[in-house]
Length: 529
Image 1 (cartoon, rainbow, N blue to C red):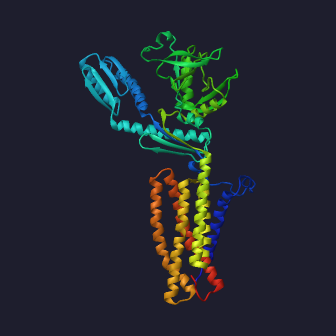
Image 2: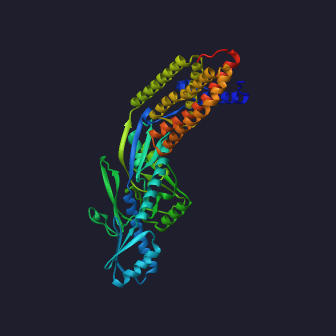
Image 3: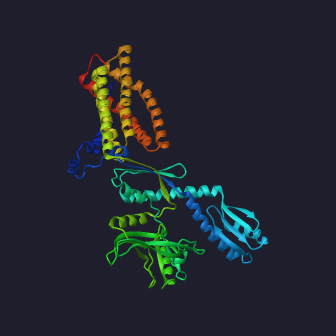
């Protein structure tokens, strides 16, 4: 006897109501959604870059700058090691180049002892001797590790910046060894986004060398350990002028220990960014300002001096301000960038592509038309070939589409144009299981000369394993696409995976429920399918 338990009926009902709960807002106007009761969901499927417009960027991380800074740090490590442990090892010069640190000893006999000392204190480097010179270079393994860490850290900081920017469902992922893909759907001000994303935001505090005349070194090489930087200001005539400063090259403090940053106004009404350090930064900033009371300290951001005030008294509260020639939006963006953190290396835009909102709207319309046309064509075909059974398949197919949209809305998935293609493909695949079931029912009824109820029961039982095998193999392919693919491929794989799972549920559960209800209430004597 063909039976359908109460538990299965309740399961189908709960799944259907849940899918409708999440899918319904997608077909309502914004005004109607806003007027829904508080207990109802107002979320809709997020549209990807190709459906609502936005910006696609490919950023390349300048890992060479990471190596350069690492060699500058290595120079200090070498100097400290020779000072603390190599008192008898004299050297003439010590300099950090683009791709190595070069140490020139005063005596030939000092080269080998210096190498042995540095091998103990500095890891991940290889040494080259040439007379009195000893060159230190990072090994390839160490460089690969540094590259991987720099790109990974850049990825996380960019993700924090985009989150602060407030873009819904952005795509941020790594590509290759040193590239990062960023997709910002629905963004209007692309230039502002680029300025926020591409800015290094390296904040540092340098003491001003007031013992030398900075004008002597403009256009010339500054003394060792010094660097010339400029502060941009506007004179009374409205012209931009640059004020030079001779600074100590090594920063006395960096912005890596910032706890927060916010925009506001100074007492004189200037736009400013107020920063606050964490506990470690507060202690270091207090020690620095206490030690250099009466001296000038430059606040430098990305190689540009924003201000160079005289330290009148120790600053022990861990707070400071950055003022300059920027407006409200620029101050807010700068505070946002500082909160997210400085990039470990500069980035450059290797590729940029924008999708206009009108083009995205055209894509949405084209995708919707494809789904509707495909849906109607499949429904008509099922009605022509399977008549009453085709009606049951069409109801299950409608349930299948509601289930896909509802699930994607519930998990906050992003719908892309390839994702729409996945839905169209799923509509065709969804009735495939019903076709298998109906053909098996037809064979059972014709060959076994049995009752309609028995034919329906045996048809479902014999088609079950075939349906399961066919869908599982396709699901495996979809999972591999999702795991190994990126961007549009992931969108296609996600909708395909959800569609396969929902089509199996509707074919095995919903279609069977409808046919069971028909057999039990109509009690047909013959079968026309």
